[in-house]
Image 1 (spheres, rainbow, N blue to C red):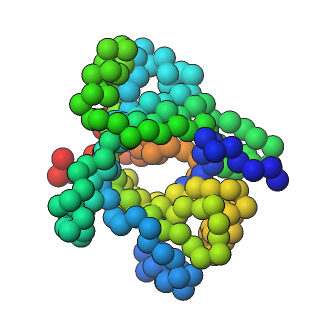
Image 2: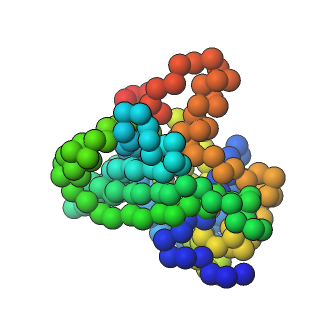
Length: 207
């Protein structure tokens, strides 16, 4: 299979319902934590008429802050701001079970970039939060395992080459039938419909 272009994101989500089992698998596989638990605040921007969303495109500002479990690093590392562009979802042969999108990310200044986006006619349309811990597996190249704690549940995101995603999912006790390609925004809207709740932002209750 041809290599994945550098600016192309290939990923899936897996819903986690058994934390002890996940921890057991990670320990058994000697998973290595490469990014400690980090709080993420994400804001999506679009035109008032949501022209980007209609085209399947996304502009996001993400703020990353190490959690209190890493007080030493938190005291020396300011919050990071990342601007992300994602293109329309693609359907590629033999990869229909994965989410495939163009993705470009750059580090930015929080205040400056919001002013630029506003000047371009974009405005905040959706906010969502999560805590993320990132792992790698020995012997599985080109793969990130990201454990996400969100207000609508716990998930793993596996990002990398399709063959690496499949191998890691299998080693962690999942099958292709467990793959989820929906965004957290879409999963949140499904949750709201199920519970007959009015959608808002996807934030933790203390916020």
